[in-house]
Image: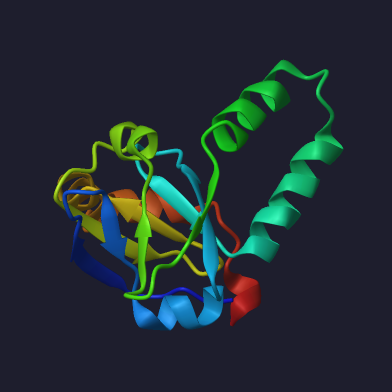
Length: 147
């Protein structure tokens, strides 16, 4: 499952957004959408969300941080079916969580994708365009095994 690229789409008055066709080909009939960690939404293929769920359950519920993470992801999760036009209806509570109104950026993240307001996505882009900060941020990640 690979989700790459970024797309700007409108959100209609009912809260529906078109998901790019290449994403829909991977997803099938539905997608899991939940609250993200950065003021955005995260969207997962059903199998990926089930794996994430299993991993969270393996942590155990006695840990306060585990319970918080479960609340964040599970209480905000919704499996959403595509309509005949390739749109999903983002529930109002999720649109409010991510401040989504009339336009959204759909952004590939490899195994999943994110949905952002254009303003928050621009903030991310601005941060990513800071070369010196990137050097410090990413130097701790061992990417040498990829070469």
